[in-house]
Image 1 (cartoon, rainbow, N blue to C red):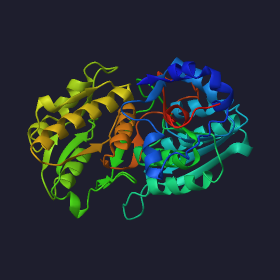
Image 2 (image 1 turned 135 degrees about the vertical axis):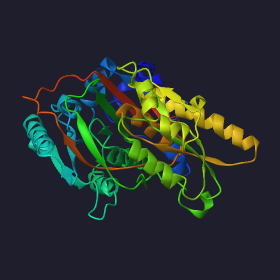
Image 3 (image 1 turned 90 degrees about the vertical axis):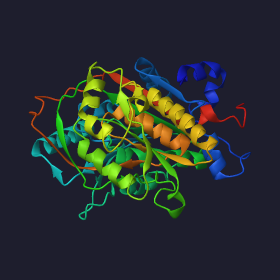
Image 4 (image 1 turned 90 degrees about the horizontal axis):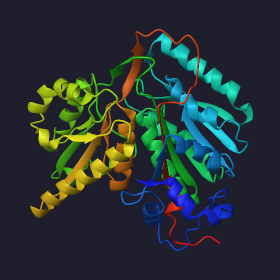
Length: 405
């Protein structure tokens, strides 16, 4: 990880030119694919910052930026409102909020969603505010949310923006992953700066019980060559993200992934360190039967990554992928690493970065509904969350092709 502040300090004299406008030139690149790779973050260079530095970035860059598109969602937790309301006074920002529609959600959660939407309507100018309903699952059980969200966003990109912000705080993975990939592709053609924000608290105000789909599916835009005949003989390294009460989802993904050919290795990611020190141990105990049974895995395969640091998850996957592929390459074998985000959102953010940079397929099980036994909060108080992250995904910091005047 490279702090954004370090890049800003090194380019302070260029601020008048690149800070407000942020548009890049791309004449020296031969193709969109080449520009896609060179105009974005990588495992070798990724500008990111956390906590107080994120707030400085919002005030110092996004507020004065020429034209900003903010894409967020109306989440269940109040933390999903934090970044949107922090930028609500910006005169040059268009706010677009995805409302994820699931068929099986409790009245309490629907009421909380309505309250959060009304709050945004009181904080943000109606002229720059838009809500879009997105159905997550079709009537036949097929996952359609990611494709529908990307289709909606394609209309927003008809306007030229200097900066695009995706607030992943309240987004489901099936929405967030495709939107981020689409935004980076937009940058490859327009030169816009692409930013990913996420806020999280150590403890939830509302405890959720989720109902998962009965099928595993490839994330929209992240299938790669999986499912094609060319992948039939490729060894598979599976990296699932362990989370509480997700045994059925894990088994569903394992059965699908191993249906045509066996999985060579299972390397689960466990949150450690964690706000709850024994969380990692509890998860390993919960998954012990799968771990020693169908997975035939070893404790040497476990990937420990910081619960609130997505960059740790990103780099851990990078190291594992490189080490495993080197072993198989020596034996003249090919291998594909398959990622499965699940549970803790900060870890999923790190998986997203790895999937884009290493071009890895992503298999997951969508949530079709949520219920809760928690009482709705007595009021709405949007406080600063425990953890804030900003990752600069694409744009000016990665433009090595030209020198700014």
